Amino acid sequence: MSILRLPGLVDAHVHLREPGYPHKEDFYSGTAAALSGGVTTVLDMPNTDPPTATPARLQEKARLAAAKAVCDVGLFVGATNTDADAYLPVAPHACGLKIYVSDTFGSLRIDTLDLLHQLFRTWAERADAVGYRSAGAAGGLGPIAVHAEELMLPVCLALADLYATPLHIVHVSRRSEIELIRAAKEKGRAITCEVTPHHLFLSTDDLPRLGARGDMRPRLATPDDVAALWANLAYVDIFATDHAPHTLAEKAGENPPPGVPGVATMLPLLLTAVHAGRLTLDDLLRRCVANPRRIYGLPDQPDTHVEVDVDAMTTLRDDAALTRVGWTPFAGMAVYGQVRKVVLRGETVFQDGQVLAAPGAGQVLF
Ligand code: NCD
Ligand code: ZN
Image 1: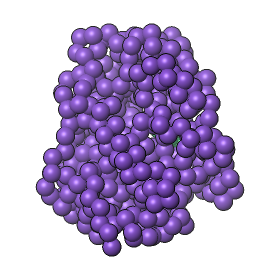
Image 2: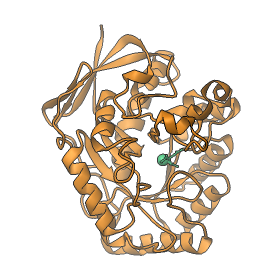
Image 3: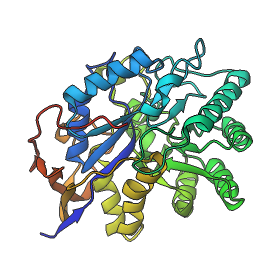
Image 4: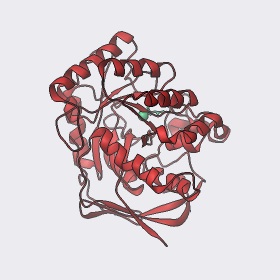
């Protein structure tokens, strides 16, 4: 047994489903699943019901998270078509602004160039007053986060350039996207991006086997797209899961919603890639700890670490995950790396499969 001591991981993209869909996940079950995967900070997306698009909604969500979470939680705000700037007064209390530029689960969607333009402009104007957030500093704004979806990607790159807003591109999955991002970075553009484990470890080849359990937005890509992500990892700033749980009954229904759980399985999948020599441990830690902390200006987590048995081989199972929905698209995969213990601010919050922290041990950031 060889125990490795790591800093607590950040999962910068999760959907913890409260308020609106607690049968899929809530702040307790989602953060418990996070701890089981060595994640001590999650950044939660705004496509709940109601969406996190006004000061009252952000406050309500922060209250729910503070009462239930067992790891630290940052909250994104989102923009709606009908009242695009409603979140602005509380923007410094969010980890960033998420703009939905393509169809997916939930009602958030910005569907005109006019609105998209307005969002970038007002975010930049606001930042002129309060600044952009730097590591650990309270008060400034975080980045704008957008989906990497086909032709919307160059539009968002152009707007970020025009208004000098930090832009973070979530779930990059296609060769065309990573190559465009690479070109923009080579020109010195201050953009960052993230890739999910499912787009690195699954492809369209897995779809016949997975069916709706392999359906998410963006959809699984071809083996050639997957190869392009691995070949361009140098241009990928963050690994984040897009943990988007739906129940198996929903997945088996007429119109299965897109999205798959992932917060508990990111670390073993990546450690298995380290074991196979596809990644170094330093590559992993930069993308799961240092870079998300820098990009979102996250405060320090003192006296926090994860102990993982890197030689322990397990088979990922549907029923092993602490997430409420009880399944994983990676079921059946043999992986290295079992989280034995998680210490958060000096307290053992997870050990040998058990969550020891009381609900509320996690803090709401910003
Ligand atoms: C997400 C969800 O279910 O909230 N689904 C998904 O397929 N990724 C929404 C999203 O992130 O687009
Ligand atoms: Zn998402």
